[in-house]
Length: 339
Image (cartoon, rainbow, N blue to C red; front, side):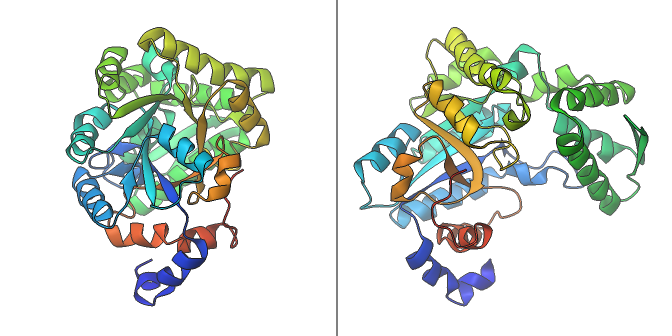
């Protein structure tokens, strides 16, 4: 991406593909949790955010809430570039390390939470998988056809093993089998998955404190962080609507914004967008790689995002993404990215 900036391709892309705004996507704030880098892309350093916000504000970007994103798109307000900040899953470090940076720069932010993580009905299965592979040389996974043996002896092999396990759990078995397998794997390796989740995810008291911050908006992210497209319609609806109801019950405010878990083509499509619309959300965000265009006024429940993650923690990388260069590559030259 540095090459695109140096050769002038970013400037050309900005004229052709640059949008009117962006929705930034974050997960964890702080150093990566795993030494070998498994899931490291989900972590962003506070110092990087501090530098980035200063830089973008200096360039005329305006940071707004998701409510204002919707208002600006509907009104055709495109005289200045604007950005919203979103964080998925509700990690404790969002409040401990992220909120101070947001407050220092007066940046509004939305935290999407899964009540199942807080209530103990779901767990961070992908983090458990990374932890097991990180600390073990060989992992045996019981499958319907026998045992999958994963070689985790070196950092490179750990990454291959993790990728294989993720592929198996997200495409070769259903969502319920995925959770059963990971629960059994955690138990076999002496890991209390619920205790791990409780340590990493904000509880309701912490969320109430965060919700009192005028810069913060709490959004919904389903109950149990399931891939909605892999559930039947009634269950997908229950995941979406149930998360909003539980958040309203515990925080006193019905969430207006929603994030689809995983958010890619295998997890969300037109049916899921219809369900989010039926649930009454004002906006919903995917993980599709894209900038906001004026035409997104008609697609407020399928907004793309720009990932701020551990792999690209340099403002120059973000410059290239905000030029539209990487969006053009990722989407075959299509400017309007939805589902």
